[in-house]
Length: 114
Ligand SMILES: [Zn+2]
Ligand SMILES: [Zn+2]
Image 1: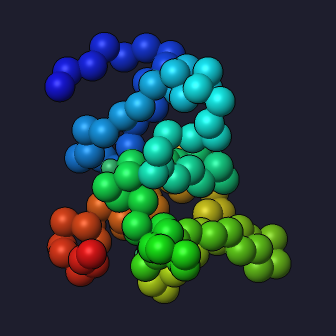
Image 2 (image 1 turned 180 degrees about the horizontal axis):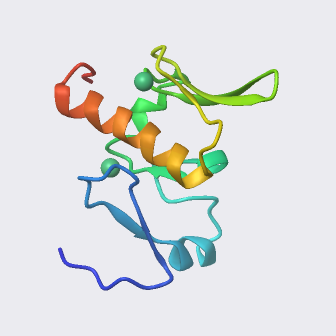
């Protein structure tokens, strides 16, 4: 389905995923977020209901749940799988892109399966 980009469109952050939702509709429905979607506010990322299991699987952490850690003056993006990114000199957008490239690579490689 082709969508017309506008303010309300929120897409899944995975580059090859076409899923999206209407944030205005969700907001006025009075729910915190779209059904089954997950958001990681630190890097402004979101995953659709088909991909949210990478972050949260059932009641526990998913295989690629990200987090931030600060070591001395450097902030690291650390993935639950052990992948990590030294963000020194990177913008939030660049850090998000690199984390997403990691995530997309894992999905494409099929190293993570439901
Ligand atoms: Zn998705
Ligand atoms: Zn990972």
